Image (cartoon, rainbow, N blue to C red; front, side, top):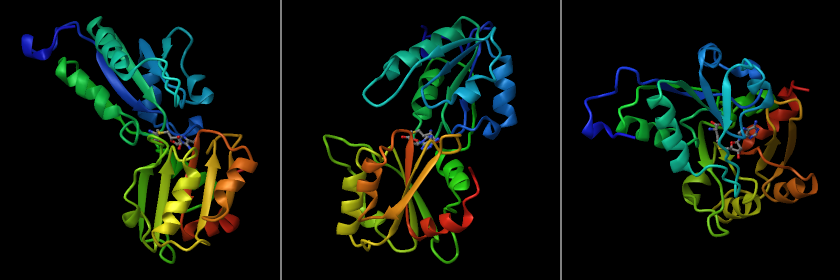
Length: 257
Ligand code: SAH
């Protein structure tokens, strides 16, 4: 690999990398641009969140490379993914880096294109439907609603050293919807902390497994019940947690399955 500083921009035969959002699962939620790029790629690098339905749209002659990552099962470390993208582009390939949801929302998309920028590799970014909007739509839980929520925050709820580090006072505000990505493992802690910081125990909360996919499951409860319900129902990843008054609308507005 040759860094940009030692070089005058990309070489003539350098390829290009497209960082593409694959959406939350239902292949119909791909953008037209994402679909067209998948048809024209030389190689597609994808991770576990990209659904089988989306992968099935890629023509057989196009090379696909699985690069992980699942919690505690990193198939390729991030640096190696970055290096692979650079190498493939330097070989002149048209590379699609396909990521679940939107590449700029908890997707490390920024890190991957930073490396490309350093090496002078041309790239483009294609947004995708992020899990929060896909799951909200397919579970009938509007993220904002004039009666229940005037703001909505997206947070990553994964565990660091068995605890969840979040700005709890900011999250535990009234009339706000909280969407927690990667929040399944830390769900009990998240519910407890939100109550400790002022949200009522009976605040509605939901966990949605495999949103937008045929296996979608929606579990609704409250901050005092949801963690135990999720364990009982053996909810698995990928799952999204939604907290706030809007969750009550699910019973009226659900339409999928
Ligand atoms: N870039 C992605 C998010 C990656 S973080 C996006 O914009 O959607 C991975 C987390 O996203 C999962 O742990 C889960 O919380 C959430 N997620 C992604 N797809 C999902 C789905 N189909 N159903 C429920 N949650 C999903």
